[in-house]
Length: 318
Image (cartoon, rainbow, N blue to C red; front, side, top):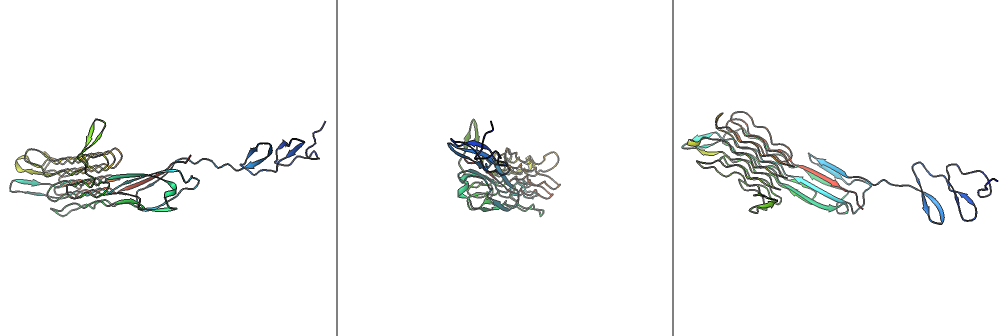
């Protein structure tokens, strides 16, 4: 026996037959991509299902505009990460009167981050990437500081200081201020304990003595300090290494006296850019982006600092 559907045997094209408790009925036709949604004892309906978005990552290596991604709940969590720019190394070929100064490495750029919700951000936000400190080629010249990186008015990361013409390394950039001279940017706690390690926060290599060099101090969130080269002639001018960093940029290495007493090595970084090596007579490479410090030099051109960077990650709300 034929089943009668709402008084006739002609089904609705694209519809679905269901029971209404008395007889059989057809839904209207859905549109492509829709799914049938149950409404309990009432007639089912077609519904458009929006796929849950995944993680949205926008990376900025140059200044620009961040745009809020579509499809995310206002409660979605957002991680903003900023790296300041590295300072450039200095150039110094001074060797007189019992002392040697061969150019200090630039300090690495600092790192800062902030967690917030998508609702706290505008439809667009301005991203400013700090420029790396420019290289120097004139003799006995200090390096240039790296610029500040920012995301809107919410998050800032400050640049490292340039190496000193007196031979000292530049201080690493901090979360609240830039490096200045051989002093890292604030805050400047004596140390931060991470597991079994201690990270003094990013001071540059101070002037060395006749019996020791002065490597840049390593850092956790700040940039690593630049390596210093300042010695008595009796110990020549072995360039000191730049300080390493975990999140900030590594410091640049100090310049060297000659082939035997060579330049320092740039500091490494786990998540920021590495500092560049110092040089004696050749041009030093730029620090790696984001935030690596440039190397110092004796008679070449110093290394420029690495530019900053911003990464904004949006996680789907629940």
